[in-house]
Image 1 (tube, helix red, strand yellow):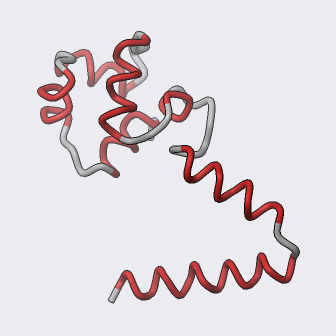
Image 2: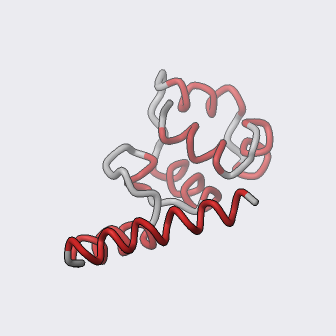
Length: 100
């Protein structure tokens, strides 16, 4: 799945909704997601803003969606191995709470 499609689906939007909000024609948006056409800079900026992700993420230059994720990863890397294990346990516990 392309990051364009992933970002849209994670935001819970249909292609039609994105097309209306961004004024990008539906057929063009579909070609972007399929990888048939490359979006121009204006389209990338508009989609990144709507999805709440970075332009780099949409262009597959980065695996992190936004600045918060990048900061969390950077902070995690600075932890000791022991603290990394604690952080992982906290994340698992939070995920379980969220599922309840």
